Length: 160
Image (tube, rainbow, N blue to C red; front, side):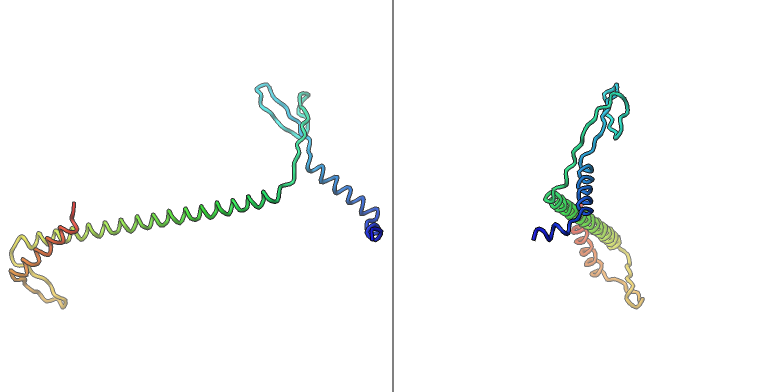
């Protein structure tokens, strides 16, 4: 059985395999030159810059598949957290906008109730226009009832 596999790997294939392994090995170990200038700053280059350049070998190892999976999981978790945070901020902004709209509506209701109370308190003949455009004069009882209703609305909505 080994002989059958040995026949498959003829000389050319073995040479190619040897060169591939050798090239991969050189890709994993590179020689760099480190030069330190007069101010103490280090410069790295693939060629010597000056006579003071010292060769340094940098070993690069293949990435660990477990680390790749862990990093991918962490990135997915970070993206999920960012999305949740963005949704929470959007929800808070919507709630703030709704609250501001409610405050505006309360302020308008307060202003309208105060105006109605003022008009009903000043006396005189008060006219309301009906649904069909007809004029209806309010009686004294209607004015008193309207004034009490407006006062109750002012107390409810104008708690300032």
